[in-house]
Amino acid sequence: MNNLNFYLGQARKSHFAIGHFNFASEDVLKAIVAGAKEAGLGVGSLGGALARPGNSVAPCVMVGTSEGEADFVGIKEAVALVRAVADDMQFPVFLNADHFKSFEKCKMAIDAGYDSIIADGSKLPMADNIAFTKQVVDYARSVNPNISVEGELGYLKGSSEVQTKIEISPADYSKPEEVADFVAQTGVDRMAVVFGNIHGIVTGQEERLDIPHFASIVAAAPQPYYILHGASGLKDENIAAAIKAGITNVHFNTELRVAYHDKLKEEMTTMPNETTPYKYLAPAAEEVKKLVIAKTKLFMMK
Ligand SMILES: [Zn+2]
Image 1 (cartoon, rainbow, N blue to C red):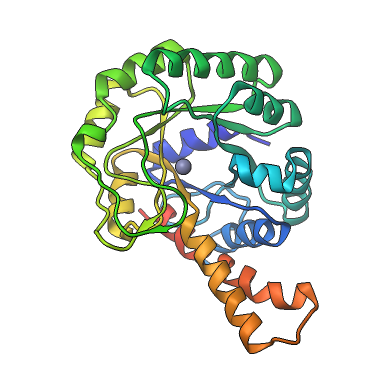
Image 2 (image 1 turned 135 degrees about the vertical axis):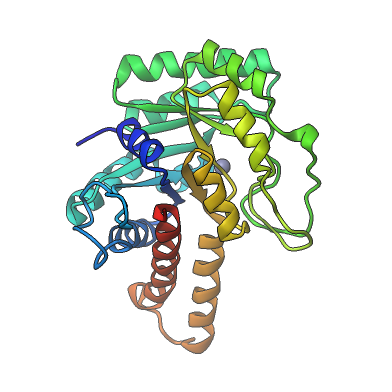
């Protein structure tokens, strides 16, 4: 199987993005992989094939566990589940440690066999963030040469839930020359940067990306693959513009959580006596799958 950096290279060359979706249970994981695979069926070749210009077949999907989600699922369990589902569905799936904030946690994920790590030192002073990220990069590569490591610079506000208002100004954006310096000193494969994006959904304002600012970051540091975090709540055309400008991977979490939660709540209300988990959980997972199909089509659009 090709590694994640290979697929990110394909995405950069052909101007599409790989989807990244979070899970904390097996039903959601399976819904994500099925959705990513099915998104392109009927349009071009089969799901596992490499994307070709003009079709919307996703070549792979990334699934992530935050530290909290990893604690809930179990780090070893997450690795085993992802391998089983990828094998079962015959589709490449890469497991990402999403915003792991300490070397110890990153090491646990690397040792357990995660394909990808986000060493998130974005709340640390720059020098500490560089030292932490470099330590993770060096350790990850010593264990697994195929691993892909992401660093984060610039503090991404918000959390993966529905919020009213988050103040964001250009002063919060990642600075192009700092990104270049960070990449040179850490050797990361991927970068998460801030250019108007926030985590979660806000209801009291419109979220908008500053594409020209993002383009200035890419111009200053063209090496790494760029990742868009906090895509929930963004308009489709804003996401498409970011992909055109060089985003190769889009993180999408909160809207999935809301879709799963709302359908489950509805199910519990309309079928209050249904106690069989696979019966009352299935419609919620189906909502997740629908959303993954829609987003994957958007990410593959030319
Ligand atoms: Zn994120």
